[in-house]
Image (cartoon, rainbow, N blue to C red; front, top):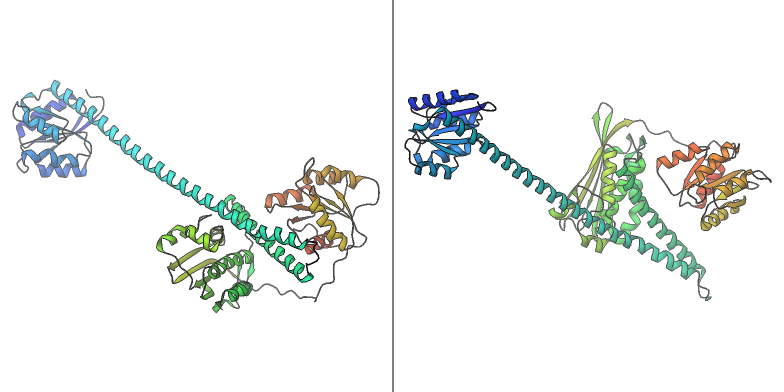
Length: 539
């Protein structure tokens, strides 16, 4: 008896030999037997069923003897093929083995004992061969997957290495201007003019803004990867946002001799629910790239709003340039808009950049419910299109302006500045003193608690850095609140992450201000946080 049911196909045109073989198989036990009387019937059976073993007569009327095994073998799907020979010679059997058969049996030896041994051996050997074949296939597949993973890892490593090199260049370039002009503006040789000093400060401010934007791109990439980038949902006029971007970059286009045109089409008076800041960020990157890669010619920007029905619209912005364009290979390289990816290294050498802009824009488009696409030809320019679906909405309410706002005055206010950086303490102190405040300083959270809870005149406000040695700002703020301190506390942090903002408010801070900051940020935050101002507990 065989250990499990064996599906057997008997291919034999002789009824006598077929009956004899079937009786022998039935006496073995555990065999499910099917019969075929010709090569055509055998082919049909093998195409519609799976078998464990095929008993094959070499003398079928519709098949050449020498080709019988070759015809059956590719259709057997791993089944063991046992050839039935009509004489006792080994010549035909050996030829069958060479063609792929597992065994051969002379028809005069079709006994129960012989058949059980032949079937068991053939099935086990074929099972081992099939398992080996499967393992080899699995091994080849795994090797291919590993090779693909290796290639991807090497490509990612090269991209990140290139990114670090680009980032070093992008950081060092504005830093050179900042440090160089600070040194030049500090010269004491008596030659420096007020005009030069003013220009130097303007260059320092401009390059500092470049560094800030670069840092913003890196932080946005990190937030997107972490899935914690917050998308607002408020009324947006697409035409207004795109027009602002075009006017913002127009001086750069004029400087390069590039003509820039704008068509806002059907979206001039239409509004949708979206995030104006992120839409502007995407369009600014696309238009900025178009100008960067166009040395002579034009850049056209087209904004449109399509009514999708059921209160939905599809906003789209198409940016077309007549710049250098990209080859099919270069398009394929950037089409997935992966971080750190650029068309090729020569692009970086000639035009600069970190390779983050398009990746961020593509991710933002997806977060806004849309996608970013590109079409380009070498020497003929490129066309980038961003589209996103949104809900149609009414225009945002108009806010009346009361004219120029009077300067903020902090006269008589006693303010404590807490920061472990002496430079930041001096900067904050300078801005606050100019606004009329009386300023004191602390170097860490423990020092701040001692000063705030000590004797003397009560504090009106604290600027609290969150990341400091000895005791951080979160711990110090929570301690002050637990001790009954009620004056406003403004958190200072270099982090833009929502969890850090939430932690600050949870500890008891009234406002949250991110570094770097300018004078207006400092004074407005102070005035808004002081008692009686409706802006308390705002970011």
